[in-house]
Amino acid sequence: MDFLDQYSNGVITALGFFWNALWAFVLGYAISAAIQVFVPKSRLTAHMGQGGFRSISLAGLFGAISSSCSFAALSAARSLFQKGAHFIATVAFMFASTNLVIELGVLIFLFLGWQFLAAEIIGGILMIGISAILIRLTYPKNMIKSAKRHADDETGSEEDDFDWKQRIKSKAGWQQVGNRFVMEWQMVWREILIGFTIAGFIAVFVPAEFWQTLFLAGDGTGSASDLPFLIVLENALIAPFVAAATLLLSDRWATSRWQQF
Image (cartoon, rainbow, N blue to C red):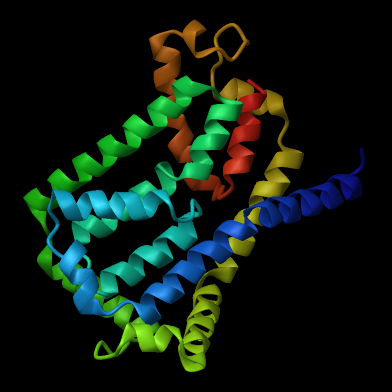
C-alpha cells in the first residue's frame, strides 16, 4: 500500500471516529447549553452547592447519564460550576461522565468482559472518593475563585432572576440554548479536529506490532489472567502517557487496540 492510499485511509478513519463520537459531542454540549440557560443558580446550589455526600452522589448520577466525551463533559461541568455547584461536586461529575457513563460500560462489557466493567466502575467510584478527600483537605480557595472568574469571562454569566418554566416554553429561551451551543463548539473545534486527525492517522500508520511491543502482553493471548503483575503494572504506567502524548480522544480507538491483544 503506497503513501497516498495510507493517507486517504487515515483521513477516512479520522472521519469515521468523529462520526461515531458526534452524538456524544452534540448531547454533551446540548446539556451544557441547557444548564446554562434554563437552570437558575439558586436551585442548583441548593442540591449541589455543599460538597457533601448527597451533592457528590447527585453529581455522579448526572455524570453517569451524560456524555462520555471528555470535551463535552468538561463543558457541562463548567456550566454546573458557574451555576454554583461545589467544586468537589463538579470534579465528581467530570470523573463520572468519563468513567461511569452507561454507554461506555456497555461497550466495555461487550468487548472486554464483565471483569473490566467491574474494574471500571470500582475505579471510577474510587477516583471520585479520593478526589473528594484530597480537595477537601487542600481546598485551594483562591484558585477556585480564579477558575470561576475565568469561566465567566470565557462564556459570560447569565442572569439568575428568571422563571425557568416560562423560559423553557419560550422561543427566545431556546434561541439562547442554540447560541450557547454554537459558542461551545467555537471554543473547542480546533482541539477536536487535531485529536481525531491524530487518532485516525496513528490507527493507520502505526502497526499493531508496535502497540503489542509497547504494551507487554505476556504470552500474546491478551488474557489478563496470564499477565504477571509487573507486566500489568508496566501497561498501567505507560498507557496514560501514551494517551496524553497522542491526544487520543476516541474510546472506539482504545477498544480496537485492546482487541488486537
